[in-house]
Image (tube, rainbow, N blue to C red; front, side, top):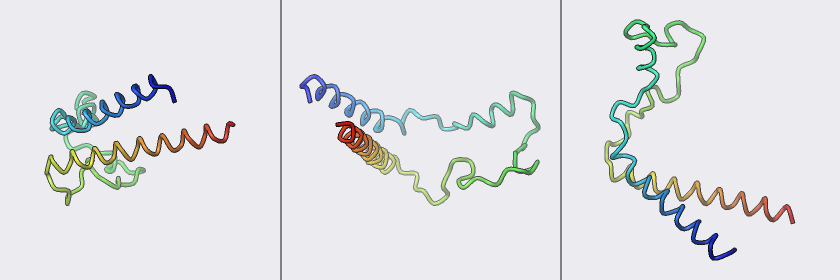
Length: 102
């Protein structure tokens, strides 16, 4: 791998980790765009897809887990671990694909 490529990868990983660290602090406290869209469309208060039938209940309703602690340090740690795992999986897939091409 070229030195320029290594530098680019390191910078990209650092940017990913910075975004992981900052995301809990800059994320919206009320992020549900679906409810806002329903209000804008004039649907009645409390309208939900489940009430009209046909779609099963979501695994995580309202994108929340009731037992999850509201600890931002833990959230940052989980985001960093998730970012690193995702990058490692991506590099592994790229390595396998490159190895199979040759």
